Image 1 (spheres, rainbow, N blue to C red):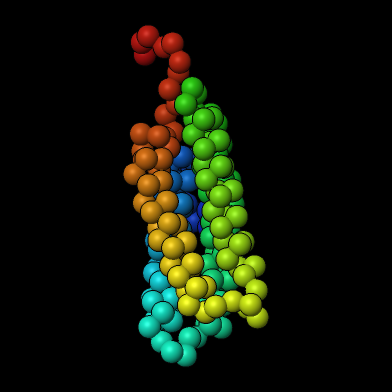
Image 2 (cartoon, rainbow, N blue to C red; image 1 turned 180 degrees about the horizontal axis):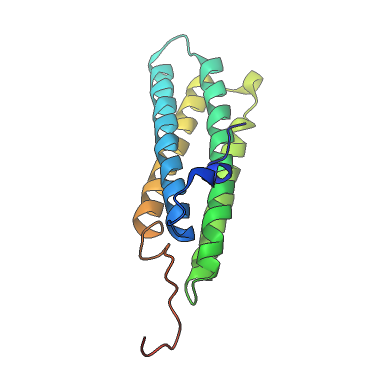
Length: 165
């Protein structure tokens, strides 16, 4: 199982705030996830063009994607949820939406990994992986644009009903 970035925070800048560190670690993981998903897409695309589909290679890659992605989701929840839950009034709602999205992603990954090899059509497996990988890439991009921003994941808490200072 891949080592969690959450567990590798020890080398963090001591002046970096909790939210900034969380955002940086999650964004770093996104770089690695994109690379892995794109590698899987290349394998799935090659499998779709081939008469002799490399089913075992793609299945192994899908298992690796699941392991890495599930660890990422756990890290993201450990890093981001506390920041969101402390950010009233909208943070807890954002946290709830994030957990719902993560549940859907875990379910999709589990369903693809549970695909029975003896009953599967290799081309259909490749196409399903392509669809899932493209959806995960879109989810990552959306999360970066709409959640993992310094305006939302921030260290300077907003005080509700504060009028000055």
